[in-house]
Image (tube, rainbow, N blue to C red):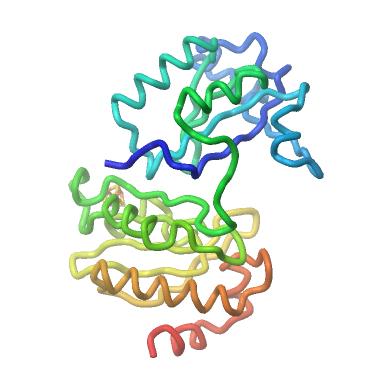
Length: 260
Ligand code: SF4
């Protein structure tokens, strides 16, 4: 399955003062959220290395877990590192990534090295993350193989520069556990194939994405996503998310170009 040691990693900060005194017991007692542990501060105007050197923050390390898949070996390695550095807990993020919370800023570099990863974001603006549900392999409702499709999409578009961050949600059936309608690129499986949704957003200004095509095979879906991203890349403004782009671009125009 997925290699967890890729370069699609992120560092965020959590106020260290918020973390002092927080234990795993606190987490299990559900005190963490009310303690503000997961609050992130802005650090505008600083480079990533300046942020890393900050003496007022502690760090979360988010290894590049692909679609939430973690091997037992990787978990054992993480646990060893967490114990060594006195890390109080792990946090699974809403993007199916794993955050290691509460270590000192000075140990960030060391942790990255021990994980066999380079520090900081390495990729251009583009595919931000790919979420996928268990799909037909592991879920009784599954109609398509969402995990395999996630790997294919990462391979095809993982390093593609795009106008803005682009989130992908792949659901193995129409129940849409991965919220495919509110991702920039959404796929959900039916018996006859994939339905492709484009231009969704689940943020502060949500938008239901547009259905571009249905009953697609894996290859057809990938080809069509490539065309949608090509159209988006060519016509979107800098940092314009697909949802805003599709609000000002008629769906018929996109379909005319990508479906011929
Ligand atoms: S979207 Fe469907 S296949 Fe995927 S986890 Fe949910 S119910 Fe299962």
